[in-house]
View: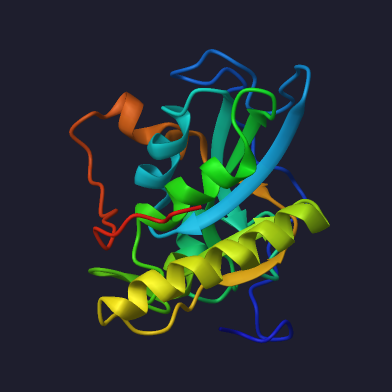
Length: 202
């Protein structure tokens, strides 16, 4: 991870993306609805991660982007250089009356290996780290509790310690338009997402 002083300078202009979600048809930029709550996760390549959440009942919209680093409004190539400090993340807007945050955490834990540090399988780099980025103290508490539960399950099966970072949500920067709902636009596209095969009982 670069220090803030060593990180790339970035830019002041925001990324321009198509507002309409390719699969759901909802607004990616400013979703509206009753009981709308945000969640954000990093679990390896964001293409596969986003698809796991847009399929979930109660999810209003999803978007992929960059969070947890220093460079303002980074570009994909800059993030991949390891010199921005950002993680590839999926931001989820969901109806809390239809699906709860713990259900999203279950999807998060079961669909990647949270013990691998700065990688997921063959995808290696700081942008592939496991992370939960919380929008409230309640989310933070639920995330920590779920990690304790899943660590116990993993340990019983011989897995190493979880390396997931759990922090309050940093600034989210939209990724380039072609990354948004990538596997909806490219059904046979690359997806390196893979879980441990173990269920998370939360």
